[in-house]
Length: 438
Ligand code: GAP
Image 1 (spheres, protein in one colour):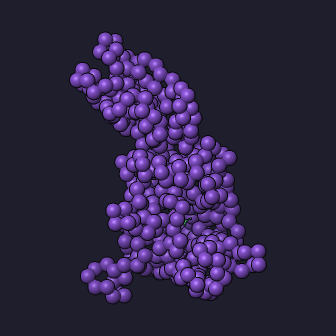
Image 2: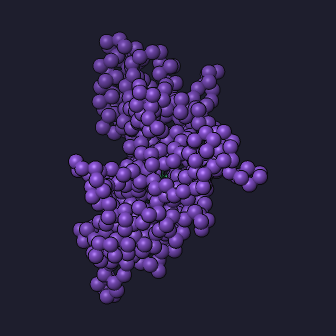
Image 3: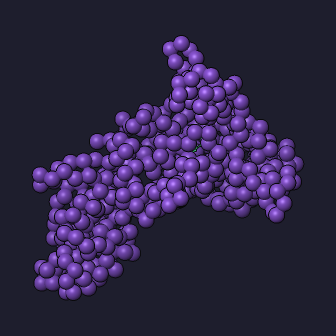
């Protein structure tokens, strides 16, 4: 069962996934903090991406470039000039909107979604980059920008990576990190925020292979979401219309997810051609090319870019995993998260706080911690503790009870089926490992 937004926002806050930022000061403009569960899950999303894009491949290497770097990057890349959204003001209520997000009414006119007035200003280009000043003087010579995409770090380091990694096209550079955009209308929880995390691959290919690799990455990236548990029916691949394309793109397809309000982008796969490498070559005077010693060919590679949002994707995983069912006549909420994404893979639960059980439970905890992220909880009745773990998506609970003192075994409970089996303590690590597929 797919959740609606209220379910997820409530669960995220109540259980410690995502909190509104600066809540004690009334919050701050659609910014969010990731709590004890959220930080685990977001890390798992990023690790799953890194594993698939870097660890399991021989043709991709990683990078962690600076967020704050030379403003010349953004002049050369075209972002200073073109990274804009069309902004309109409502003259009646003074609210600001993105013109391309307003639905025209049946009379064809654009209406303010807040007060319904049609008295809107002409759209003007609003640059989304956050400007700041590097150094003590806030004058134009010290102007700098927070990066609006992690990409560009990949392009300006192209020669460094090529030289040190000894790769040749087709090869890729992967990066995960924060990006910042001064969005006109952030919203829908963490779907559109001003500070967010991206997971981006720039895959450099011989120009005549660009079409082939574009198709390859569209398929590959679509399947990544399916493999991690999003039902195919909640995903689609949508090619961009010509007028939607970014200033650098010769073709883009989005992997979209069926959010409660409709289809929305999780990831864009773009053919950036040789736009960026050529732009930085021209602006810096450094040749950003590949020289093929075998054939004697020198060329500027084309770039296929699968660019995903980590924070947005985490929300999609939460929405897709949310379910309710009945266990022993009682309604429960369960997050059917893939174990690789769940904030905790195992919860160790002593049946009671009695002195005799706690040391055994903590010994079991110490056995499991090296192979899984574990929660440990000795409060409340066991049934309530199971419900709490179901609600946060923990795939396995390990319960230490009074029998454990006699038979040196524990009860292993499965989140989805709720089936419980008895496992000897000296086999619990192997059993958990095999169930988690770890
Ligand atoms: N380098 C290409 C690029 O940045 P994009 O489509 O603008 O492409 C890639 O961004 C992904 O980053 C999006 O598919 C989305 O998941 C995420 N993203 C973009 N803007 C975002 C925002 N304001 N809040 C949260 N995620 C965002």
